[in-house]
Length: 104
Image (cartoon, rainbow, N blue to C red; front, side, top):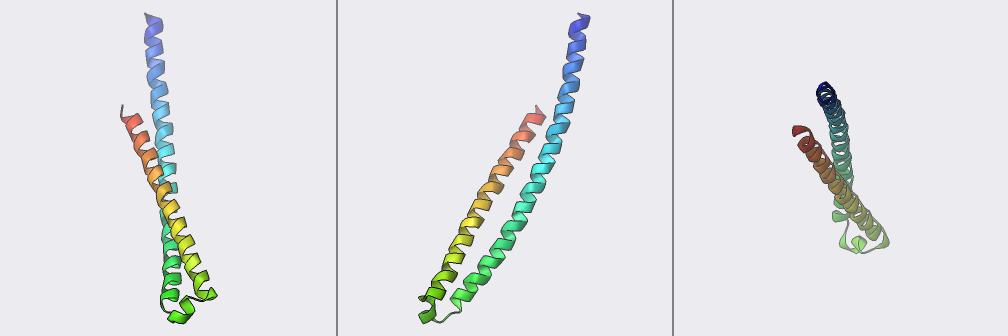
């Protein structure tokens, strides 16, 4: 009986240690998510500048090689933004799962 009691205490201590580790991981994931949000915002600003540059070009230049290159950059930046949004969403799911595992 004493052995079981000691094992139960030991298990509880391990669970508290694991919760602390998971809380620290959650914080790191949150910081990473915030950093990705900041990066996404910066890329959106660059994309918007490139789109404005394209929109302000005369129509004849929009269809030129220069216009095509600008539009390609806008499209590539849109893809990067979409990928970052997916990554941020996935990180939110990671944080939710960590929250669920520490609340039990």
